[in-house]
Each structure stands twice: as structure tokens, then as C-alpha cells.
Length: 479
Image 1 (cartoon, rainbow, N blue to C red):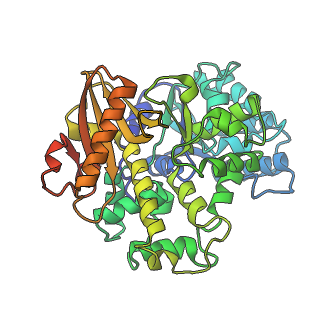
Image 2: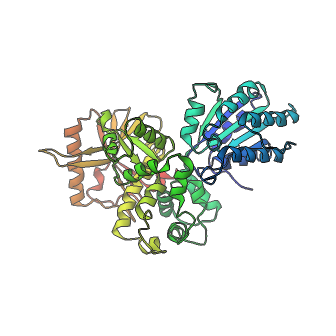
Image 3: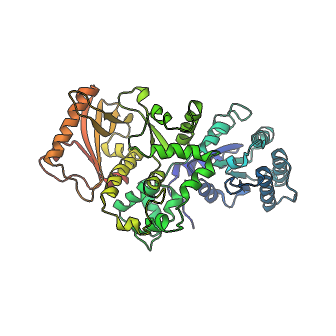
């Protein structure tokens, strides 16, 4: 039996909606490959009254999109008992046939209708949204036994057309569920079930590359080490994920090159860029750039970081999707022909530098676990980074992570990915003290400062380690 890893809250929510005794209209969304379809299929696989998946426009390149989508819909209707064999001429007619099918099944049992990849069905001038509105408002909302679940990887489409709809579907959703990437703990459980035996150090590295995306993680096999799996999936000629970057963007966006251009630019700085800096390199400006940045953020590829200064002009956009970051650094443009590149380069300076930056990304994605380790799970916090370019009295410096707490404490976090216990040397101690003094002089915080280390195996005990008030290890990140 297949097991759903994690998703406890989502499973409980869907189960409650199934037993609510009234009509439900549910949107499930999240990054492509995140496991939306798997979750719904595994929960309701024996209870679907109708299940249909839209065809990818990327795969239908050059074909008549609307007619192909409608023909595919007819085939799904037939699988669930419809006697109609003629493809409808419009989505309005298609949903009419769906109503006929559902009414023929009676009202006695709960009817789960699952429409997967709905953004793909909404082709140009197709009338899909109007037909969906009519289906729900004119029929579905009055059926106490109907549970309509719509799903899509194009999160911006879900937001614009369902969650923030200002037309006929305004306020019609009864529940929205956004799926996030797997945590480190969930990744560990998935590997355990798949009998992939790697330690937590390597599980973190797998997260740095694949980002907690179930589809990618399920590609790893127990016969290979992590490095061998990475080579097999990404660096081998014709490997399974070697074209994933293009496939990912082409399947989500109408003008994918515009989005890839911005993502490639963002990948050139771990600190990210302001909107003004992006505009100087962007293929579009004004509302076009604003829309692209919004959609990339809604689809989970980029994040917006507020500087501790609080100034809106200091907002920085960062590429934070681990898979895209890894792909653009090591694979894009065929940067190597070595099919065993990852296994052969484990201790190279370039890989070590990448690990340090990628581990920061892991930590930002596990703030909840870090707060728990600090004993402040119930305290409101804001998380920042801080960069100071320097002036006549202070050198430039950077703080990896700031946790600004409502209990009037700020954790200044230093993030280090290390093969063993990290050693604070005399020189590094001086660097930490200088950085702290610069922050106090420039930022003028009105709260107590706690110096915090987040590292894989903790700190080596010496005369400098005692100055660090909190130490978070990778074990804490797995809780």
C-alpha cells in the first residue's frame, strides 16, 4: 500500500470536507512536482465519481488546443460511464455532459469530482472559466453530495481565477489548500520507505539539490549513493532530469523565456536583487516585470526578503527554488561533459562554496524547526538578512539570518555547513566581534542580541565557543 508522507493537516482537512454533508469546492495548488495529484488520488482513489486531467499545452505544441482538450474530456466522461462518444464543441457543452453523468449516479452517495491541471484546460478564448462558473453556480453549489476538487501547478492561475476571482466565482471556494515542499524530516521518511540509506548529512544535501520536491526525491534509488544518484539523474547524457528546467517553465508559463530570463539573472547573486536592479536586466518593465515577479513568487521559485532596515526600496528578490539554483549553477549550458561530475568533485572549492550558500536556503525553509530549537515556537518573529556595504568607519559585512523576536531579542545567526564540528578560530572570533559591533553601530537595534550558530555537527568546544549563546545543529532541523 502506498503511503502519503506528511500532509497530516491537509489529509485531515480533506477528510472533514468529504464528510461535511454539504457541497464543497476545493482548490489544491502548489509548485509543479509537489505531489498535489498524488495526495488527491491516494485519498479518494476508490471514491471518484469523475476524474479528469487536462492536457499539457507544451506537449500539444502545434495542435488545436481547445478541440484536443475537449476530446480528452470526452474520453474521461466515457471512463466513468457516459454514453456520449462525440466530443463537445465547447466547455459549456462539456460541463453539461458532466452534469448528466453525475445526475445519472443519483444523490445517495458522496460524489468526488477531481479536475486536475485546470490551468491547462483554460486555453486562449476557450470559455473554460465561464463554463466552470456555470457548472458550480448553476448546479454544483446546490448539490449537498458534491465535492469538487480542482488542482493546478500554475499557482498564479489558481490565485487569479479562483482565489481572487472578482466575477462569477467570487467567494465560491469553500477551501484552498497550498502544498509546500517536504521538510527534512519528511524527506528522511520518504527515503526510509524507499530503502534509500543515506545519513542526515546527505539528506540535507539532497534537499539542497532537489528542494523537498517528492517527484525528484522519488527518483533516487537505493542501489546508488547520493552522489551517484545525482550523476545518474542530472549529469548522465540523456538523464531523466537533464531537461527538467525547460520542461518546468514551458509547462507553466505562456511566455516561458521571459520567466527563465529573470530566474537566470537572479541566480547570479545569493543576496538577490532589488526591483530596480532587475529592471535594468529584464526583458520587460513596469507592469510586465511586476507581473513576472509576482507569478514567480506565487509559484514558489523566488522569495522576497525584507532588509532589517525596513525600507521598502531595500526589498530583495532571491531565487530560492533549490532545483533551479542547482541546475543553473552546474548544468545550464552543458558546463561539464563528465557523467560522474558530482562524484568526482565532492571536495572541490566550488562545491564547498555552493554547499555553504545552499545550506542557508535550507535554514530559511526550516524556520519553524529553528524556532522550536530556540524554545520560541509561540513567539511572533520576523526573519531577515542584513547587508552593509561599508562606510568611512566600518567595513562592509553581512549577516546570514536575523530572527527578530517579539520578546525583545534578536538572534544573529551564522550559518555554516561543515563536515565535522565547526571550530571558531581566533581570527574568526575577531570577525564575529567586528560584525556584531558594526550591526550595533549601524542598525541601532533596541533589543538584546543573542549570537547564534546554525551548523551541521555543532561547535568544537574551545575558548571562543562560549561566546555563542545558542547552537542549532542539523538534528534540530529534522524535528
